[in-house]
Amino acid sequence: MSRVRRRLLFFVPVGIAMAAVLAWGLVGLPSFGLPHSDYARYFAQHATGQRHTTNVVAAIVFDYRGWDTMGEELIMVSGVMGTALLLRSTRGEEHRAARDPVTSELLTWLRPGMIPLVLLLGLWTISYGYITPGGGFQGGVIGAGAALLTWLAGSYQRYQVLTPDALVDAAEGSGAFVYLAVGLAGLAAGGTYLHNLIPLGTTGDLASGGTIAVLNAATGLAVAAGLVLIFHEFLEDYTETVPDVAAEER
Amino acid sequence: MTTALLVVVLTAVGVLGVCVVLTHDPLRQTVVNGFFGLSLVVFFVVLQAPDVAISELVVSTVAYPLVLLATVYRTGKGTRDPQRRRRAPSDSEVGR
Image (cartoon, rainbow over all chains, first blue to last red; front, top):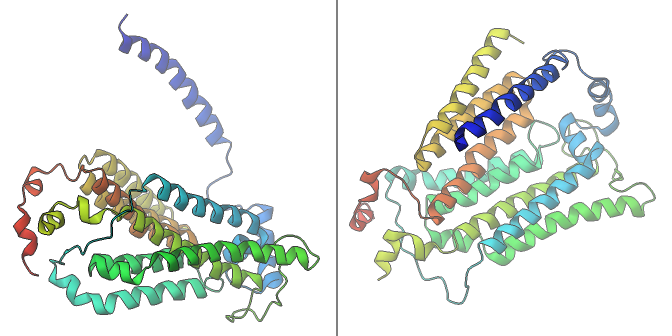
């Protein structure tokens, strides 16, 4: 019997069995959409009163489930480290000036307005993250997108000047450090790790939520800096591998 | 929650997902993946989850295409479109 036949003979009954188990599992799920679990109902009723934030998701992410978010932030940091290790090349020589002109007139025309606007949007999404939908992670990625726009719509040199390695490294490290430090401060103040110890303000103001605001800002900073570092690693050998730019160098 | 709207959006998500798989050129796949991400954003908004929608929007517009394009560029595969491959280096000096 040929190999394909043998594989089919094995796959078909196993596939049918898996489909049957999947269908049985899907049938047993709660119906789509309407009935909330008790857990969700508790949060919908009590989260705003207990934490003084209007964005319940941010309260869950940075307070009720702050431990999980800390794990995710550390995942981000290790992802950046892994990318840097994998894509690390010989850094002996200096980056020569790569002439990569923007050939699109629209980009050159939109650039002065677009980049500050996107950066402002990112900062706004981060800072109002616990009042309106948004948050540290979303705003951080938008901010990193603004940095990327300086490369896309400008030149590689401008991008290098605006995102120096030391600054971005420090930003990412301090974002993660602030998160861990706030947790330890909660321990030191006699409560649990990541206990919300700053006075909660008035609901709906920027000064509300206690440690949620601090953790939100720290996450935004760490995510933005982490993504810029990943961009750095990918764009590292830019002068050598872009065919048009390298041709101009010679 | 209007059922008709949900059905339409779910169908869009499914169709676009299949389209992403059926696109063979890596560069074009990135664009189609952007549309797939957009349909997911609409889906999450219809399900009343704005935070997840913003996250998906931001990831599928900024982070994911960047990593995809940078990887395609670094591995040297580029586009399989023969017309773009044959473009001469002098064309990059237009508009400087």
